[in-house]
Length: 304
Image (tube, rainbow, N blue to C red; front, side, top):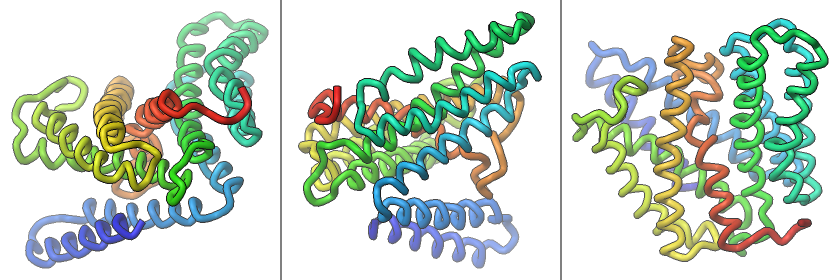
């Protein structure tokens, strides 16, 4: 946590120096981004230091905000309100399974029961026009914002944890690696990148940025993993590789959604960053993959 705060201090000082040195340039967005990082990290650190039930409720609230934002940017039918109500109701139920340590139900509740139940509700409504589109949108939204995001809480609550760092260590490892991966890919891409990967989806993504981010995060994860998680050096390096590739993919997927909807940001909640989905795009992919990597190596000691 101290290291993260130190990076933020350096970033804030660097931003102020740039603003003083280049008065003719507009650094308002950069400064807003830095201030927003202070608020986001401060809030998240506070929540992590509270008892586990508070952390669980906070992550569930993130799922709610993310689902609300997703449904606000995607065109929906008025008759889908009842189905959307049940989609929201899936949030407390999904986190309840984690609260009672029922891993088996947590892992199948959304992709099996919710996915089967929501079309049933839509059929009862009786309006078939636009049915496939609405069912797909609600399913995809619940998968991204409820199922995938809930893996953050699953990582935090995993019974197998580093003795010194606990569940906080594994979650911090994921958050720092994911967000730093975004920064590394952006900086390396801007500095050395020229050959674009998918210009129609995200013109700023380059092969140099992608490979540079993968290399840096793999090495950084190898160094930090043994201190924050139960992973060995080589297992941590593999985790860094998974996180960097998955984070890159998640960023591209949300970019594709925004381009399809012809919007710049998914919301305006976070100054300088956009919405919840803009900030969590990489985490939506890295959280479930990192969790299942840990689960594959060390298992879940709770209920079946």
